[in-house]
Image (cartoon, rainbow over all chains, first blue to last red; front, top):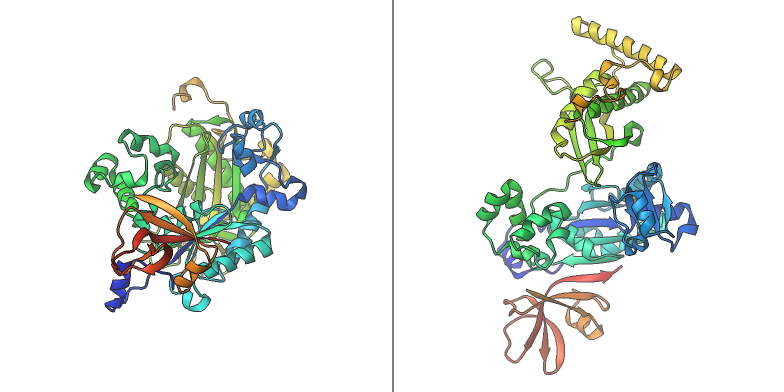
Length: 430
Length: 72
């Protein structure tokens, strides 16, 4: 067992039945550059910058060597080339990144069934109660690191704490290839000296607002009261205050990684801000996604939309396909592979997450909760089934035409034309 | 709050009875007196000792152990 603070130890001496939470945050060191180095050994020791495919693409990731030259994520490729002229600039290989990420998470699932993927290169493991099976978290961290190094060739840093927030901060301070274990009861002391711009709940974008209040470090937040923070920043302020106390009750949620077969992306040339155009792009993506789903005889239960802005920030959300209504109450979860149904769900998510007045660089659409399309015909097929059959024939015909005539000449719905026709001046104010 | 790091040597690892190992790095919170039962690094007769604090007179508190950093 990990050593713990006296307060918790007292609770357990009193016969408390609560089990101490143990959360591991696993963070792959220099993930994107390291994966590319596995593919090409000549990159070892050299500065590597992963940039978008186009010349005006943004820097997606920079190796530690490139960061020392001043290259940062979100920078344009041309600016990065000026700073690090000797660096190797490579396009992202998403297939390779996803395979490496899947291998890492498969190793983590050997130690706990509760594994949450925060991104391709980092995730949380709920290790609560698992120390009885695998030993202390410190020793397990060592085994995880060894297995990942042996099976994938990648290095990881780990943070162990009683909640997700503090374990995240711990793994950052553990860079590189170290493990930091924060004892239970000392979370507040541990995060107090962390600069606010490096605190997971704040980030670079929100840090200036806190600096205006004279808050430079997380511990400074506690000089105020929770109500003042809630008054200034709303629900986020209250959450931040609780975070500064080292409290975080968020559970580790197991989310299946998006299936790369059912993920489509479009990089915009140039970056766009007009909502109508972006919805047109979204419809075009929906058509591509629907075609993939129908080709695999699959249905999507939810769709995920990711908006990547020109300044490197991104927003992501998911929505159900065809929300449950009284008509299908008691039936299975609704799922679809039809463009129009997928688009309605995707547009709803897009409207919710596209909240910044910043140009958009790319849109990513993914189908989740994939299930096989039913082969069983309905016995009492009504109007609804007949309409669905007609739509099915229409989409099958469209898929055949799009396969035969790919590109701009393929037939499409009017909604997608907004992204094809140059926008007039009256649309530019959006 | 002030912090300090202290590399664990062989003698300290023996004191800690398995809680930390030789080569680990202790995260110490300095500038406060430990509460009863807290793991603390103290100076006892010119020798640094890792112990559960019991308010013993004559010990100089070097810091309360709030975590450990281990090279993987």
